[in-house]
Length: 399
Image 1: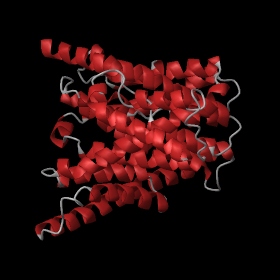
Image 2 (image 1 turned 180 degrees about the vertical axis):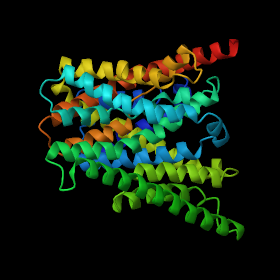
Image 3 (image 1 turned 90 degrees about the vertical axis):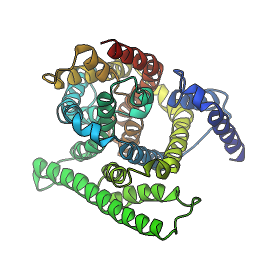
Image 4 (image 1 turned 30 degrees about the horizontal axis):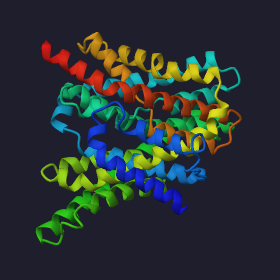
């Protein structure tokens, strides 16, 4: 264990020292972390032979995603978002359902052993996007602010929206619906996940903001401890919402959005530790993904899985986005840009671990497809984020 810890600590130190330089290249973030896990894991040198329980990986990925959602939401530029809310609205209310529907249809053509509900589960697991994998796009000021905020808000909300949908399909895949029928089951789960998540996120954040403000006025908040309340608040939002039957991801995002609005003049200094913690947990998640998950799943890959993964990242994502933006006056090139930057990341990994633990008949195929899609997304979106963002921003400036 200590040998693994030493190796991991050395990687964290080395990456931290050159992160600023790497993030200006196609090899920053998830692509480097996963490559390290692959190189030193069971498929590579075997020096990082991790045997981690599924529940541990799931918890780590969930907490990472919660922190990323909170900080991304808190950093959202609300005035810009309000001026261009139609974009994320179309992406969430039109493109997301169409993506799930098209993913289901493509799965029906590609896989002949999965049930209809398993196909719906697969499409739902791969519908959420992860803005962190295309960080160069959402942070590059050369890209119009409306597009950056639109992609950021989409990635922040679509995984939370997909949670109740996924649980509905899981319940249906495991057996007949309850006495209330399919419709009532779906409505109950959606209302519970979204409603409780919003209530917890908003309630806890209001309370925390009031406490912080009152303590700051009295000079009780020191520089040393000022960084930790946001991390604690994020974990509290996520854990409490999950413990009472809501969506921790919705609670984290709603809490982050409200916190950013309430602490807009001081949020940067308050969010520093939370952002650093989220980045560190994300690094650990991607290293474990490369070292412990990819090696186990790679033996289950088939051409059907690879074909579906490629189509999921292209046709299944880009066509619904293109259709959903009709009538907004957005140029075709911008629609294609928005459609391409729908990377699959932490949310899909979390969903994959959840589904794997349900022991469905097609569970191995579902998990392998998610892993294959995420791996291809790490490469494709990691390598194209910087150059395409720069090229897209340059074209906009020329007009």
